[in-house]
Image 1 (tube, helix red, strand yellow):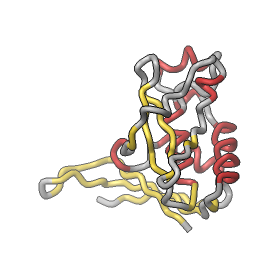
Image 2 (tube, rainbow, N blue to C red; image 1 turned 90 degrees about the vertical axis):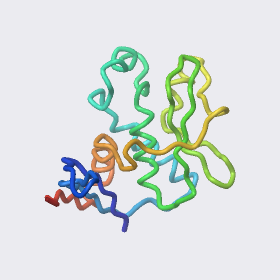
Image 3 (cartoon, rainbow, N blue to C red; image 1 turned 180 degrees about the vertical axis):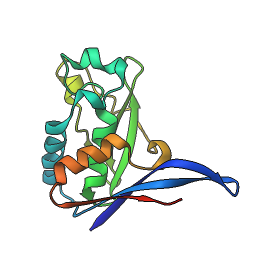
Image 4 (cartoon, rainbow, N blue to C red; image 1 turned 45 degrees about the vertical axis):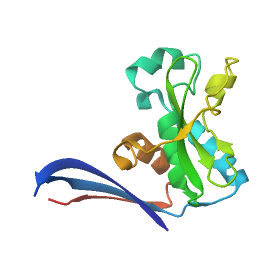
Length: 164
């Protein structure tokens, strides 16, 4: 079993910010294989919604349905897999936007659940000059958790607890 946590509602305690609410998801992750990464990527793509997008991505997303979904899709794939061989990676595309995907630590193989946002419009995803990156706030985002819940239900335990 795997448990991931997202802390919210922070307060300043003894010189540090502490989360006062925690949402945790517990589920059985997918076994690590290239085939399962493709299977999980497809499941992620099937549940993406415009509501996950920042407003400035929404217009282009109407004609390019994966546009703007790289961060939360990649983060969901990372947490859903049962292996620590995957590294969150970020490249800057030809328009100056950050694009997120995963790389395998040993081989450098790219796993990009939203690369078709580039390929579908004859552009090249920015895999070549990318670098390892850290998730914002070092925890799963709200959209990531919702994607995981949609894919793993009913095999998930979702608990929100007050830590204050």
